[in-house]
Amino acid sequence: MKMIMRWFPHGDDSVTLEQIRQVPGVSGVATCLPKIPVGEVWPLEEILAVKNEVNAAGLEMEVIESVNIHEDIKKGLPTRDQYIANYIKTLENLGKAGVKCLCYNFMPVMDWARSDLAAPLDDGSFVMAYRHEEVLQMNPEKMAKAMEGKARGYSLPGWEPERLDAMARDIEFYQSMTKEQYWDNMKYFLDAVVPYAEEYDIKMAIHPDDPPWPLYGLPKVITNSENIRTFLDLNNSQYNGLTLCTGSLGSDLNNDLPAMMREFGSMKRIHFAHVRNVHHLNEKDFDEAAHLSACGDLDMYAIMEALYESGFDGYIRPDHGRMIWGEQARPGYGLYDRAIGANYLLGLWEAIDKSYKKKGEIQ
Image 1 (cartoon, rainbow, N blue to C red):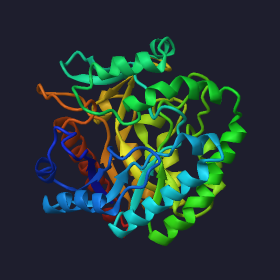
Image 2 (tube, rainbow, N blue to C red):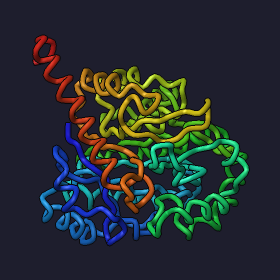
Image 3 (cartoon, rainbow, N blue to C red):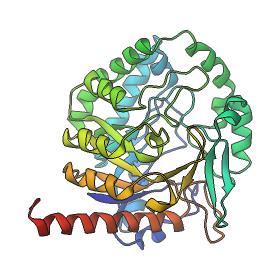
Image 4 (cartoon, one colour):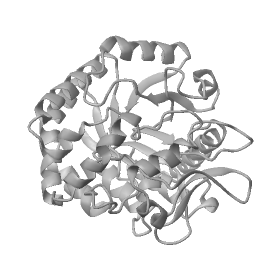
């Protein structure tokens, strides 16, 4: 298992590589090239430039998060083949740069949704929050403006300004698409791309829908165990796997996170884990919480134990953190709370590892 943290290049992050390097147990970063428009090839020289910067700080760049999928691929339009060809070329370039894991998503129109990026908690910290009825009353433009106001000047992946004009039209397009058609479009993409992921030795790790329930009539598919089984069956390659995000899947109280860890981890289909906690106000309203189990509704010890028992040897990162101690940073991606989260998770992993080895259950 490798503990990493997410980092945004080109001055689009308040957290520096030097700071990440000082977080005990963190060996690398998951990063991206957000300036490359969706659907275009990531140039090798730009990938290597970021890698050299990361390596110079004493860190690894084995994970990319993410090469976004052009909407025409998700829609199944005739133009998808050119965008898939570009995706494959990007995979080739990432492989040349030594990337081992690619976190991506197949969510239609919007990568994620929140009603507030800086909701205050009783302890004085601020978190990203979701209130279902508020979100339903927003159109994408209103939501984007609300989020931009609390983004502190940093980019919001999945909510790039150039995408806003098309969002309403895209939502309308999907109203006539069945979930079966969406699965077909996903399989078309996987069957085209996964053989090259195998060739370039890059594990494809799809991220769950966030939140994991229907929104604006859009098809939502990576939401629960049943749907994940369907997804994995679309292409049986070990390179077709998961980014198992406890925060996204844990937003639905019906999801059993430890059971998911055991099932899909034992299949060696979890390549990346985003681990964070969630505090529910009711079934569909929640705040993102500190990683500690007591701060939310998820049993982080049980989740990490299940991941350990599955033989997981991929990448883990602490997911979204609170804004604490007066930090002003990209929502969810400040330094302090994520550093605390990383070491909490590493502490759980160490305790589980030593306990199992002491009992002789795992050598």
